[in-house]
Length: 422
Image (cartoon, rainbow, N blue to C red; front, side, top):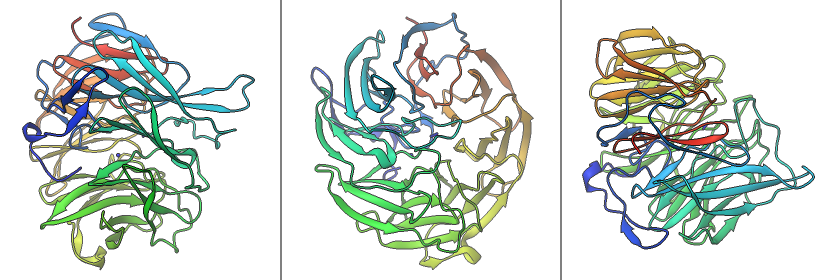
């Protein structure tokens, strides 16, 4: 399960990042965090594969030790990062590990044991101890394991700092990934009690602010969503869904800005999407709804800023995707929907089949959905449903794709696959 900076064109991304063997510039096609360079599932990559199977169009596959559902991140088309969790000898503890692989051949470059907790919390059947996706920026790799700790590593896998003082009672394990906002690394800590949003100094790991959620009246307080940083009317707003509502904070100070209440909804997983002046957010795992919200204002803006909502086909786990004027989403039960993003009016609803957790991506004029059984569905983006391919990988997966020219990286239960030409 599974995490936008200031709006930038993909071409203008000019963030410096260091490679394993030399310095380079973060390219427009890189996939540096959960849901890619904008955090919203878009890639400018070309010639992205349409057809594959367990044996067809597989450039390589590499066995990944342990288990985890963090999505792979990619830098300069050459370095892949992901996390995993293994048991210690005797099975009484855990090793929480950061991995770096060569994207060209899948070979391991380094593996670092970042944390070694004595044990983990109980997990939801769809979760793992390594579900949050890493984040890469300016030669630094940030890995997050929820209440078990957060760390920063350099390009060679050396730990620069660890932060494990932020303890909270986790429910079903960890899920949400971090986001960078200037000098702050921000993530939600929505446990069973006293949920907060936390910002660390990205250079030192020190806590810069910790803001409690305004949801005292909500009986079940846990959630797993990844924040999204937007700029609205010239103001930066950190959007962080949680139990009972969608909340906006000042990313520099943690000051609450506004919220839209969503009743008793809890266990919120999808990452927000921002387009056409609207935020598309989900609420409530058991009875999911998708909300379109106008950001901005101060305090509780529920009565004035909720543009539309729908419960039909709304996801509990996968994030939504906006392409042009269309909003795409898929329910956990496999019902895919294309709707008008501004009004919510559905253009089509179609059953794809299987259960879904991975978030869809858009690349090369196509929308890619991946179900939990390892079946990838490729659709032509548009108001008319057109399925281009159905691809069976043969391995269970809940992780979301990383995308590059001519390539998809897909994490399965046991392997990381590079789909595309060798």
